[in-house]
Length: 348
Image 1 (cartoon, helix red, strand yellow):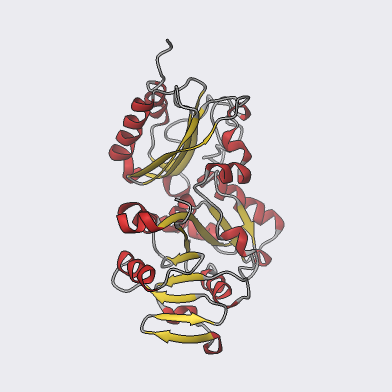
Image 2: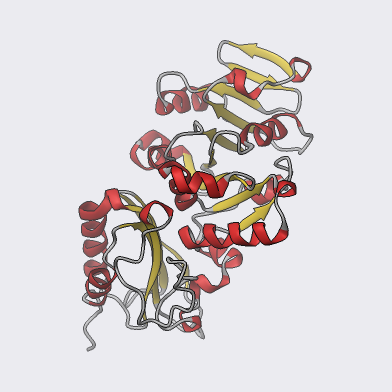
């Protein structure tokens, strides 16, 4: 599986700075070869001096990167790109500024050719610090782009004060408690912070978000659970299912169990949850302690698509437990907790 090409989905509202970031990938001397798929080549505005040669839809840059546009549909474009040349280190797919990145991320789960040759590395969302609070007030898409992210590039930070930036970061974490936030000006975030992050690799998630695998940090299971302006203390009793008037109705929470899970039951239950509530589940991730299994079961979901596999073994001195994080709309936390608890393995 390690020879699959990592794919970064790059999203962000109109004017957030995605094009600036793409231009850096295609022009900087970073020593890696990237393929960048954009919606409109003209929008990226590549300097002609940087283009070595073109063949139909592929533009090769003098740093070895190539650029092409989405023709017809993403799967077709990806197939063409992979068939023509496979000597790039990673692929970056830009979504349109108004797009919900969910369907783009889902592409890499549903097509068998792409599943064999690529792996979704992360969804990276560029956020405009000057305008994001206004966008969150009037745009469902702006909130969805944050909810789907594995990491956030908070751009144009020079246009906001430190207190404004802290308020913005609080709002972002309220929507998505898992994604680390990189502050940037003119999209000047280090490329290795954005690309090749292993956003779906549980060990990388832990290195970026140490609390993800620390159920002891909050026995109530909250992860920075601040869904309402008035709910900042999250003592476990004041989390109500209706606490999501803000941020386009998106909320997030985690469920934790220290009881080993029945492998069959937890697989069936997760499949049922994403099938029945998929449209409302924007993202879900988790690590599961399966009874009788020495390795961690790691899963992630994008809407109704679920992917899971056994990753590295638990260490002998590990405090084994299971933790799931859900980010979505209108999710019934109590019902999910009951369903999760019902998957516990019988003690023999």
